Length: 185
Image 1 (cartoon, rainbow, N blue to C red):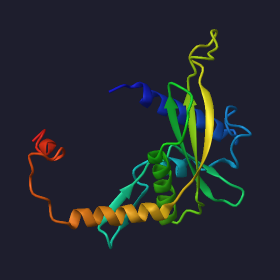
Image 2: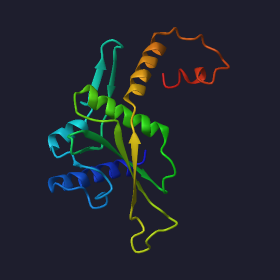
Image 3: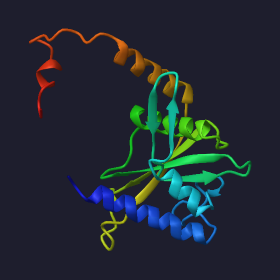
């Protein structure tokens, strides 16, 4: 497993925390995002931990999430931020990232945080076609506003519960998934 993504994660969180102390957005994000970084360091520590969770008693399912960071808008809404690092410029927003941000909005709402159906993906990327030869590892940044849909998350949880409650299909030698079932046991 590569340690570079983890190193980037810690570096960006430290970067945000340093600018949070100053009450400002980091320079690479200034003017590109609404609001400010969530000012409460203890609260952001909670949102970055698995303690951000919701247990649906009806479905008997627990959902957990760990935000990278969050914005606070002028109306006090807390908006999730997620960093993605890439080795090339972004082309389109991946559906899994949209669902991830919807899950964060869902968790914030279920934990009684004021929020709205918006999140931001911050894409940190290298651009080998337009690189600065004096600083070849300088990251570029692109920001994507994402419309989140917490109802899709609720529906997915219901679908998961249904799948868990359904009877397991019989083993079939031709099933591409069954042949992996016992690996590692």
